Length: 191
Image (cartoon, rainbow, N blue to C red; front, side, top):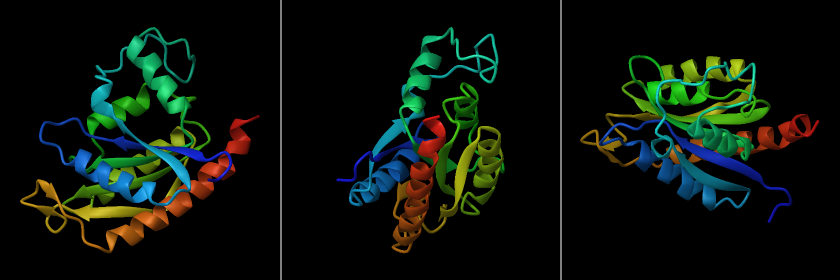
């Protein structure tokens, strides 16, 4: 066991009925658990039932959250050192529910690291590019390595996740970078 292991949240970025996001997140989790380099957990946005943003003060101005769902979300994200965002690509961007969840809080994201696993007709690349812009504003260091999955070749009938074997190597590379950055950023958060 590594002393002071990173805590990495694998965030399921879709709440749609029949979503494949849960299958993808479980695949990430199963591979990550074998590494022994961090504590990994799945964080499912469906468990938070976010409405559209409903806090009276922008999160960059105050952490005095009025809504219980915001306080719960804040505590979860504050407890983590880094994130793997599992995101579909919807209309050339990440999902609305993930964007909404990101917007609910601000300081809890700061000086942490993020990696991405995406899927879509073009490997979910545009969803990740969208998220990279958001990460910059939230002061999250996103890593270069990522996993891009094709709806046509990595999902049987677009519904059953069956990733090609080479994706495991891409996932390992992304997790290597993610853990390195999560460790490096701890010093900033301790100040």
